[in-house]
Length: 445
DNA sequence: TCTGGGGTCCTAGGACCC
DNA sequence: TCTGGGGTCCTAGGACCC
Image (cartoon, rainbow, N blue to C red; front, side, top):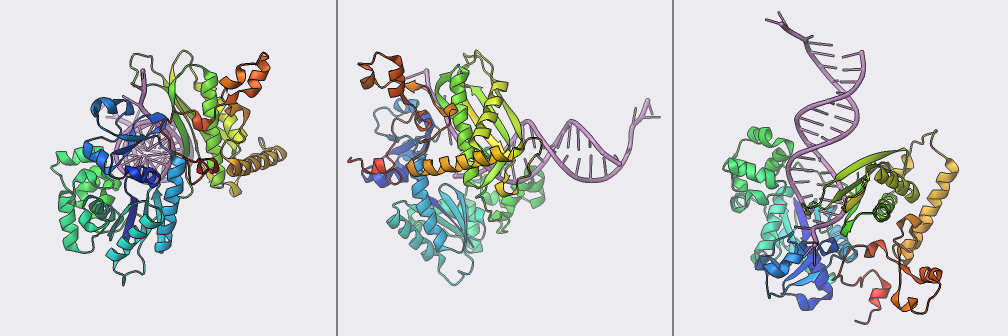
């Protein structure tokens, strides 16, 4: 048997840990730049707020209604969910973290335990220790466990934990389950299945396996088997990523290459850090840019390019300079750019690097490694971006109070403050990082 | 004015080999 | 008229997930 454990309305629940006054009220969390709704409380869902609604439309769509909005605060969500996961990991022998808010566990050697009670106790413990409500679904396959999890969420009668452990329960559950809600059935598959008259998960499992294989290939067939109780999705170790991407939309359009290059340098630096954190190197660096697709009145352009490294690397300096080269190659002037990103791929463990003798300089390489690890240590200790490359620095911003009596422009520059990458995107309603930043913890409010 | 970010897997088709 | 057969590897694009 497997259990899936996932946090209810994860980001909203994290915000409510420090704002208990918002329990029972409509709360949403916004994407980067306060762009659109990415998480909704139960009350917000009941009001009819759809996921993905642009923030600026909320006032018009729900006039006069009180909606509590938060900018996304991934530092907070990362920390709180890590606490949830560490409890789940200890509660069961085999653990697979599937996403920020979700984990599978294999209930091996727990046949003698009453699983329903195990789940209910786990929910209680997590709520008490961390303050985040979770739902738990238990079944013989992961796809069925996801179905059970949905029932646990939707019907309070299950007391946060639903178990499918008999043929009768399986059939009953699948007859009630819309096909589009099944894990592994997305928009496209759903609409094609509906064309064939398949409306529920039960309709789907009633179709012949060969037909499913023919129409929906391997992924569809796997889902069909899982719903039929045949376990075929492995517990995977997803701790080492095969590709790493850092990308952002900009708060406004950008027309000059210098500003985009500063952003791209920050994306690249973030990718290099993530590579080092998982002890890997990459040998392909991809950069993409595009204009604002919603502005049909403006000329559109988008492109991407990949640059290979002769010797796989994770040095910030190397990745940043490659990314800047790539950007220069796809940059076209006179466009208004809205988004860019860096992807590193062809990832392998850093201890297995094949060096290229044409390219490789032992001494420089070792120096860069030592520099990076020193910077990583400092940034981990004193906060992200305590030390960055010059290429990552945004133009200095004058501090109004400092400039009053200044006559020397050079002085102004020294006193000016450079914006950080963290602040380069809009986040008007961001909560504090009480669990990860001393300065926020000491905030008296 | 304002519209997110980060992943995985699978398949078809092209390039190349003998 | 009529243009082989079989294999591997790589990549882009499409589907899915959160």
